[in-house]
Length: 138
Image 1 (cartoon, rainbow, N blue to C red):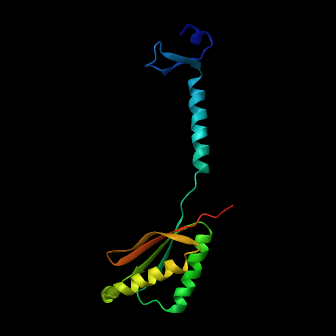
Image 2 (cartoon, one colour):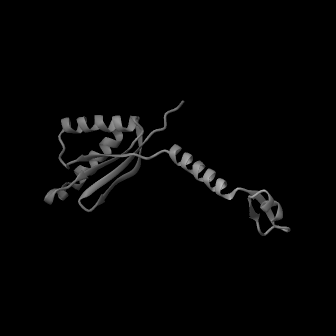
Image 3 (cartoon, one colour):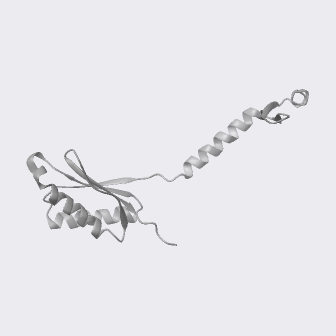
């Protein structure tokens, strides 16, 4: 304590359970500031997961399907996750099988760009499927 007071610094207890307890003389405010700076730098480097959505109807036409597939390809190449879903309006819920076939066809067509993370699953009025981009080999 005397040494810390002489140097006008703080005495910080590092390991209280050790025998004798381990302490360190340091400027605690400066230590907290540097720790905050380190945490901020690590947070900036962290990768952010981007999820792009593509919406289909249960009876989406071939041309529309190809157009949306092209967009999905682009999203996966950019490294974004893809959430493809079929939205059932009104009584179109009777075409559940068509929606599932559409999503599975999309998964098969995008096989070289990404892998299916979650198979088609019906949640209320929408059937959802997730596709994650494949890691590129360096």
